[in-house]
Image (tube, rainbow, N blue to C red; front, side, top):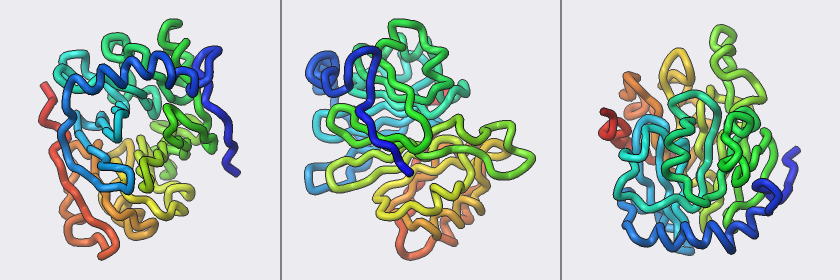
Length: 257
């Protein structure tokens, strides 16, 4: 059962942050344009901007949502400032304190308990830990935490049950799913009505392309972006995805130095 609560950053609710610090970062976000794929909603376009590996930006209206930003400040130079930051879990390709200190500004941070406990106090004051199954809002955007973990016996040490989050974001009339590091969990396979899905694949840590293909053809997102794919052979996706889903292969490694 999903539990609903207002996400709390420190002692203030995120709705208050959206009127104060987040409003300032919204203004800053307008100083730079965000480029990428445009996905139409009834309330304007979602912009999908790959950064590197597991890091991406989502633009919507005056919001710029950073997902798992790592790699240092230079990697985000010239991009709009974040109005919110989502962190799926504590592995170094998803979570990096120096990067957050450099780019976060006053943006609210949504993460899991593992990462929250590792944040320095100034960042912790603007952060909220969400557990699997919780949902709430950040800057007026509905956010739900979806379990993200391994299911294969010899991979369970990488991402154990109950630690990592994937996230559902409701942007206009579209639901976006950022899976985080996971294999196809029951919660993933039970999803429906997903407009855009970001699915990881690379061994031994997450899914094989074959597992991803089975998941895609099960919950049928309208658009799927493979990300966090490393050296995986994505050819199986190109030939196997059903007619309900558009496959979008983009370069998630152009920023790697």
